[in-house]
Length: 174
Image (cartoon, rainbow, N blue to C red; front, side, top):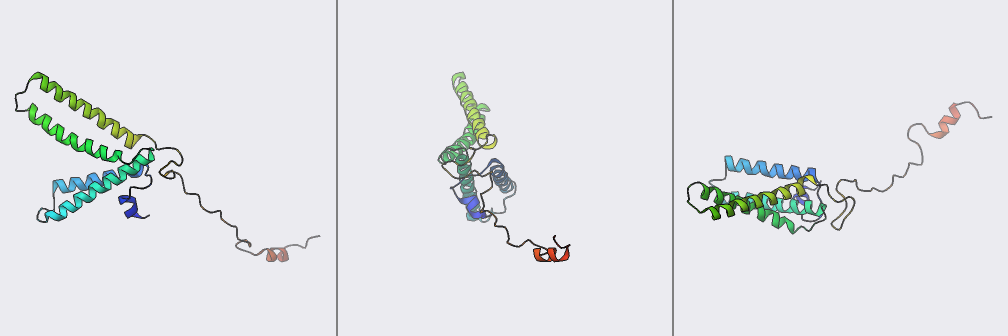
C-alpha cells in the first residue's frame, strides 16, 4: 500500500474503518504533543508536524466525503466548524464564569452552543456511521469491494503428476 498517497492525496475514496483509524492516529499524536511536547525547544519542527497533521486530516476527510458522493470541499467546512467550536466553547465558558452579561446575551450563547453541537453531531454521523455509496461513483470505485483482477489462465498441464504418467501407470483402457 502506498501510504504517502493514502494519507496526503485528495483523490479517490476511503471507507469508514480506514478513516476512523487515521483519525484515531491523528488524535493520539495530537494528545502526545499536547501532554508532553518534545518540540518545545524546536518550535519550527512542532509547526511542521501540526501542518502535516492538518493536511492529513483534510485529505482523509475529503476522501471520506468522496465515499459519501459529496464534494471534497466540504472538508474545509468540517475543519472550520471544528475550529470554531473550540473557539466558541472557550468564549462561552469564559463568559459564563466570571463576566456579568444579560439574559438575552446568555440565551444567544446557549443557542449558539446547541446549534454547534447539533452541527458537530451531524458531521460525526455523516463521517463515521453512514455507509458510503454502493458501487462506483464519480470519485472512484467502491473502497470496500475488491478490485477486479484479470482472470487466472489455467496452466495447460496440471501440477503434480503429468497426465501421460497416470495413463501408463494404471490399467490399460479397453
